[in-house]
Length: 210
Image 1 (tube, rainbow, N blue to C red):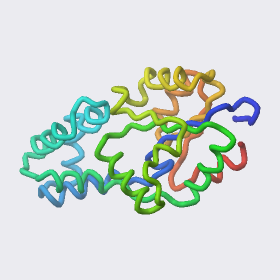
Image 2: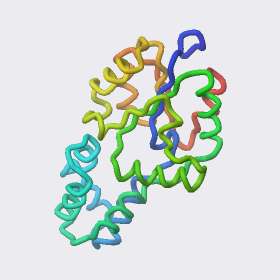
Image 3: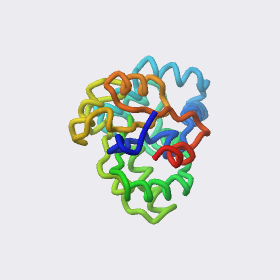
Image 4: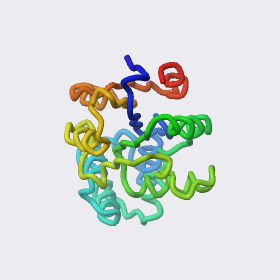
């Protein structure tokens, strides 16, 4: 599947690969605030493509909050929206961070994530408080964040951009993600992939192949 001699860069997804997440916690949080069922909240978000539009930079933070109010038909304040939106962010086990710090001494490591500014700012605060790291993005050689790129996995274009920026051949890149569609798209382009199935941890997998 992967060999030390052909791997020149390792690219990590963020959610459920490095940081544990639970999207249902965000649905439940908005449910409690708006008196709608979590299933109804999820359907409204899906119909309005809330995640995709915000995470491709279509909305600014303020525009996103206004969209949430419109979609849920409820006058939530900014703090309520941000707290509910961030509810899906859980924790980063220290062994994952330690492994990344060791791995970066051998390979350049990168982050490729479908994400948004509110989540990234919350994660920066978490890493500062939990690990004393001022900006977690400095762990990586470069971060590829969907909302800054205007692209979203599994669009082939986002992988092409990553390949071009890293400067390696696709087959020299190892990509880890927990979403099968994202894995399939990267595989189509020749990138080596490992699908992470939570609660499986990438540390146990990579220490045997890298």
